[in-house]
Amino acid sequence: GQSLEQPSEVTAVEGAIVQINCTYQTSGFYGLSWYQQHDGGAPTFLSYNALDGLEETGRFSSFLSRSDSYGYLLLQELQMKDSASYFCAVFSGGYNKLIFGAGTRLAVHP
Amino acid sequence: DADVTQTPRNRITKTGKRIMLECSQTKGHDRMYWYRQDPGLGLRLIYYSFDVKDINKGEISDGYSVSRQAQAKFSLSLESAIPNQTALYFCATSDPPGLAGGPAEETQYFGPGTRLLVL
Image (tube, rainbow over the protein chains, first blue to last red):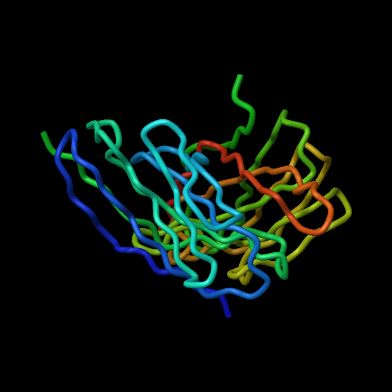
C-alpha cells in the first residue's frame, strides 16, 4: 500500500524557520509534492521534488531523499500569513494520481 | 474568473436525498478529480477521470458516482446521502506529466470546495 506520515501540528514564531517532515511508502515513486491550504480555502501547489536535493522557491524550500523515502518543507522568515495546513503528496506512477498525507497545521505566533 | 469552479459552495441535505455537486474548469485540462476532506484525514480521492471516456474509482468511491459530461465538466453524485458523507469536497484538475520515461510533475489545481452537511 501507500502511506505518508507528517506531523499533525507545528508551532513557530514570526521570523523563525520551521521544517515540516514527510516520510512515505509507495511503489513506483516519481516525486514528492507540497501543497498549502489556508483555513476555508483550496489547496494550492507549492513545490515538487523528483530528484534528491533541495529546491528553493523564495522563502520556501523543499528537500527530498529518495533513498530514505523522506522529504521536508522548509519555511524561512515566517510570516503570520504562513499559518496554514501543509500537505505532502506522492505522485505514484502505478496509480497515476497524487496520494496526500494527512497534513501539518502550522501556527505562526507574533 | 476562477479557473476551477464548484457549485454549490454550501449544501445542507437530509439523509436519503440524492444530490449532485458540479465542477467546471476553463484550464483545458484533461484530468479531473474529486476529493473529500475530513478534519485530520487530509484529502482522500473519490473518483478521477483522465478524459471524457475514462472514469476510475479512487480510495473511497462507495456511496458516490460521477459523470464526465465534457472535458470541462465533472459531476459528483451522492445517490442516497448519509450523515458520514458530511465533509468538504474538492474538485481538482491537472495536465498529464509529459516527459518520456516518467512523469516530471503533476500540479493539481483545486476548486474552492463545497461544504456539504447531511442531516
